Amino acid sequence: MRVSPETLNAIKDYYTKLKVLDLSQPNAYACQSICIAMAVDEKNIENIRQRLKAKGDPSFPHVMAEVICEFPVNYQLHLDASLDEVKSWLEEGDFLITQGWFTSEGHAICLAGVQPDPENNSYRFNVKDPWSKFDAGVWKYSNPNEKFYDGHYSSYCIYAACVASTSCADAANIYTNKELDSSYKKMWVHRFMAKSAASSSQYASASSIPFNFASSSNSKGSISILYGAA
Image 1 (cartoon, one colour):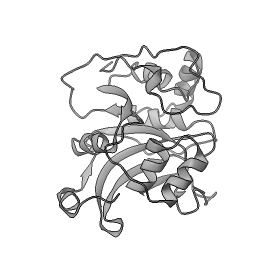
Image 2 (cartoon, rainbow, N blue to C red):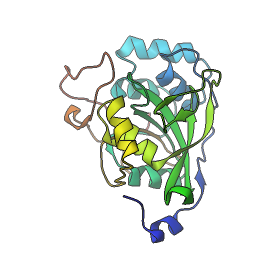
Image 3 (cartoon, rainbow, N blue to C red):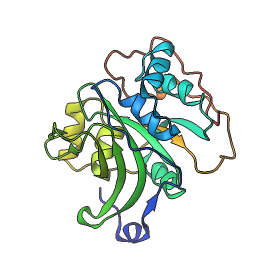
Image 4 (cartoon, helix red, strand yellow):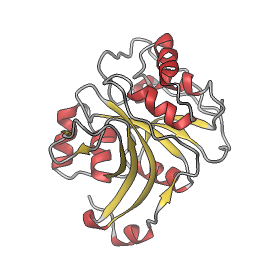
């Protein structure tokens, strides 16, 4: 479902107001560490990786949240967000980390802004992908020589990978069918805020998690992570 002309005309260019880093991913397993490092302005990637592993599975959003809250940032974890919410946060100048089915194991990327996408009669996201540029047309990373991508992914790509899908194959099909529902709430988002939020305390239930990445499970039953600043 494409956005209306009125909505498209209302979309402007927005980019994060926070100081963030551009960092490339050194191996196939460090995407969460790299994204956190970019967001918290910390170049010691291995230190972040070890902190994540000490707390559990690095791909678990609540494990990432525990490590993020060790840094002096204004931060919230959302496990049930929509693209409409993501757009509004980016319009406020926030910086976001999300995870999606870009690969069979899942992959974390950063969202740094939003802007109109007249070519697709929609909107698109400024992304910082620590691996390389994702080719949504064939649903894979096609350039092994590229080590970092600072550019744009369409709303259709982010919706398919990060919101609506349950696997890499499912994401590819959703993208091929050009599905888009900006109000659909199934997205994991680590939100780094340009200004403090009014509310700093909520809990999230594991039942709101739409999918697990490789080697993950919901055996703990619930996620007891506070939203809010460290």
